[in-house]
Length: 601
Image 1: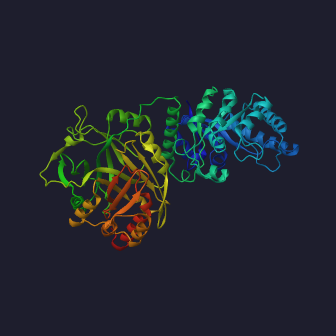
Image 2 (image 1 turned 45 degrees about the vertical axis):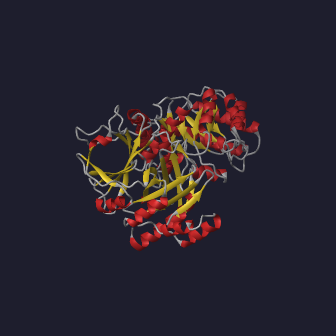
């Protein structure tokens, strides 16, 4: 199906928005009136620019407070409309959005509304223009899609149809049955379809709409269910995104437009309108790659954790450190800042790496170009929204290229046996990429997104959302700081699974490692909330081990000091615990801030 996006959904000047929409692959745009008014280009120049970019102007919007008003006010409205219709002819737009009135002059009279909209449509028809009448969720008298359709049907004018907007509809309905009436609208009378998702919030609907809309698949609305009803009417117009979002307005237009179009591809897949390659869900973590300008601090930390340096890449300055099934690559070949140790790449075990890459490319995540020696394994990687490279791997499987074959074994002491594998990886996102990251990992990688969690930090509020496989073999925790300047956005960590966190922590300390100190007050609170065996809580206090429970089991975990932007976590899950210790995050964050102030580490 054709796809379109409202210019209000993107940041920048009108020309920047048009360029971003075109490069992302959209077929058309809705021109938001404010963008036109602020542009130095004439309507004719904007029309030509759209044509050069391969974009159609699918909608001009909005015209407000038109219908069900006193005669003298309606006369003024017709004068205003005539001017806008002339402008639309210059712009090359043939459909205009008319919102249900919020004017205090409007009266609750459907017959008058239908009569005036019919007269407006008659004037529009003279200019070759159609009127798409939309019910605003906060309209003064018309606030539901079925009410708007009733007025359009009563008017009976061929140039008058309705516009369905998923936000205005889904923010008001109480259940799926409230959407069934959509199928009673003839498809040819649905002149336009606007799509938006939103988190489920209890707030004024106008503020909700103006600040918190997001792309389909990023919120809590059943946008796919609504689209299914619309398509069953026979609607064959564009799928268009109209997103009012404070973050998107400040983010770069290009990546936002790509995220937008990806959301429409996934939405169409959900209703069977397109069939991209099926998701290839990863089955585990092959490795985590750390890039550092100085390997010594990181090598010391890994050694204390019980890892052994087991292999060296044949052609690149990359070492493989391993303990159990946990593999960490240390790469000193990429130029980074002195404090820039960071988690740069993740290797994901894939049942079919080539198929996983095809899925990614179909969803606008192209395979990254790589410099490789002729003998290097052919590994495909894509970039996550935060820039982390994601490799599709097949370790020790004869049918597929094996990344491990690029490494030569080196003599090494035996690794410890405390760590069995990588429990999860925590990636902090740039401020404006959080919702995009959740959609990317869910749609491109086939992971399941859990509920978003807010975590109190001493200097703000963090948002966190985990994406995971059903069996927990891959867990990635995505988080974002409270503002673009929040330095917590730089923190990343690797959580290592262990069956005995106390033994692992003691061995780490004995080897010279430093665990994050946790305030005594935390353990006083634990004593009030839970019962522990004799000496158990004292051990946790001594080592800085934190504790949590959920309905399925218990969670014990502790943290190392940070090297550059990376730290490690030792994790013991018992009884099927499913979380990540979120109740302990405020304590951990406060402790890390305190250490940073004292030592810079």
